[in-house]
Length: 73
Image 1 (cartoon, rainbow, N blue to C red):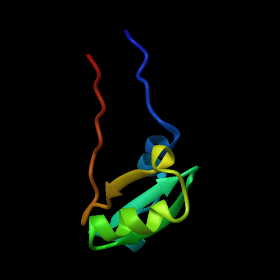
Image 2: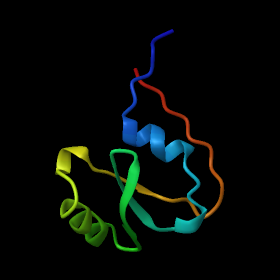
Image 3: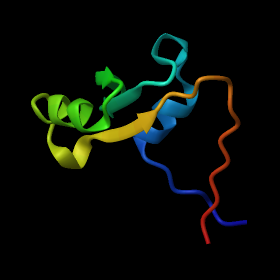
């Protein structure tokens, strides 16, 4: 079976407790949340003030618990 490739930001997101950010967009860089809010564009623009674009991952915190499956071909 092929090893899955993930990013550090992805690994951080799937392990973190997102309950404080339900339904919000979260910007992650270097294993920490650097911005969050209801508007993805604003969250990303705020995150760019704190980290280079190549280091930022944007994800939406689920309203409820969810199962994340990651497959690559």
